[in-house]
Amino acid sequence: MTQDLAPSVRTADPADATADQWWRSAVIYQVYVRSFADSDGDGVGDLRGVRERLPYLAGLGVDALWLTPFYASPQADGGYDVSDYRAVDPLFGDLSDADDLVREAHRQGLRVIVDIVPNHTSDRHAWFEEALADRPGGTARARYHFRPGKGENGELPPNDWESVFGGPAWTRTTDADGTPGEWYLHLFAPQQPDLNWDNPEVRAEFDSVLRFWLDLGVDGFRIDVAHGMVKAPGLPDIGRTEQAKLIGAQVLPFFDQDGVHEIHRAWRKLLDSYPGRRIGVAEAWAPTSERLALYVRPDELHQAFNFQFLTAEWGAGPLRTVIDESLAATASVGAPTTWVLSNHDVVRHATRYGAGDGGLGLRRARAAALLMLALPGSAYVYQGEELGLPEVTELPDEVRQDPAFFRGDGQDGLRDGCRVPLPWSGDAPPYGFGPGASWLPQPDEWRELSVEAQSGDPRSTLELYRSALALRRELPGLGDGAMTWEDAPAGVLAFARPGFVCTLNTLGTEVALPVPGRPLLATAALEFSGGTGGTVLLPADSCVWWAV
Image 1 (cartoon, rainbow, N blue to C red):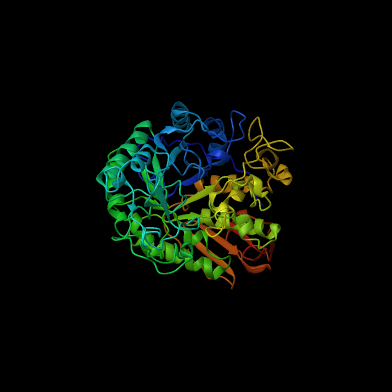
Image 2: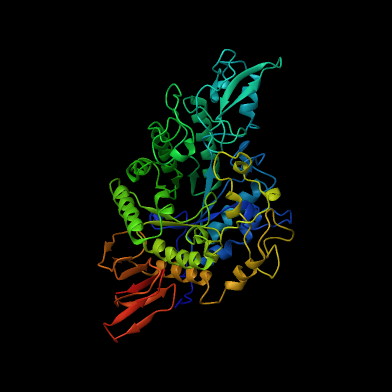
């Protein structure tokens, strides 16, 4: 049963300070700009395409959108290599398009969060070009991490740090006379040199960049690699390989250093100086929920992505453990918890949960969506998850663009599979994505998953999301607030919120339990017996919302 409930009328003005802590309950939709909607036919999504599709997002029922980087960039890493933080890359439009998008989003009742990339710049950034031309120890080089190499002739990297994308985290430069020079640090691709946040010039520049976009009207920033700007003094060796596997498992000399919190406290003061409650969201990998909570202390950022929830195994035990730990950690600092199932860097959860069985993965993905939207706090929806899109696992090597794919010992290099452009309408690619082709090919079977194909079908994943988001707005017990666990059979999670109960069956078989209340929304058809106060059979891998 998937009721088709119309989204409630929006009344909140994003600039209205009476909506004081909007982010605590917000559902924020991630727009991967190059794959959302293409307005000019070049096969790449753009800002105008996003603006034209804003009515879809408003109708879906989300509160805000987060835009991935659209700044001037050579696109060595999908725009996360920024050459000018105050300019829009021509691939995505121009500054007037960004301005129009923010204004139109506000007219639609949507807030806009933009990415900021402070850990590194592009190697085409004016600062880095100046650094390459500078002498060792010069002021231009001091904005980055330049070091002499080890070995008799400096032929070895300065330390044993590895790039997240694979290979050494250091690249050697060539001096003007053609001889080998110093090395520079890049925790990601060589085209992404790390900034030195001990340098006052770097801090002042990013204060200016943030003000530029706040003055344009954006409602906040998603801070890329928020855990990475500060490096341990002396840049010590780690002493082992496969360091990417340690990210989020332990504090590393280049990630989750305590010094990052001073930067975030300064940014919080800057955000608070603007009207309308602008926010900062940390993309931070930390080894524990307690360390992640440090990023959202009252004087730091407003939210941090909950990667522990994203990576939790499907099962009542693992999910409950992560939920409990997450809620306890954020409660300790008075912050809201965030919940997220997918993003542009991980395998889509409709595939991740399926273990090779697409039908199973979709059932679990739908159930996980209702679980996520019922939990206390704020939720993030990655574009296309509301369509039940699976990971595209059979992209030809020749079309891939993920830099990690070309560096075999880093991440799995398969991030392109979750970045395939969205299907909007029609029976053949590009399914309404734009007037031309799409930068990554779309599967033929996506014709059945398009927005057009799913709209109005009460059994579709899109209508499930629309109904859930409408109910989330209407029911006072959802969003930020308290929850309590209810008794439930093994393999089932049940929790109560004011006037509401959520039940999740994580098992591969149906489970009988007493009817908790009046059913509001379910991911699969329910069977009842015994009349009032009787029993309900929860289908395998399903979730139900109840009014009590």
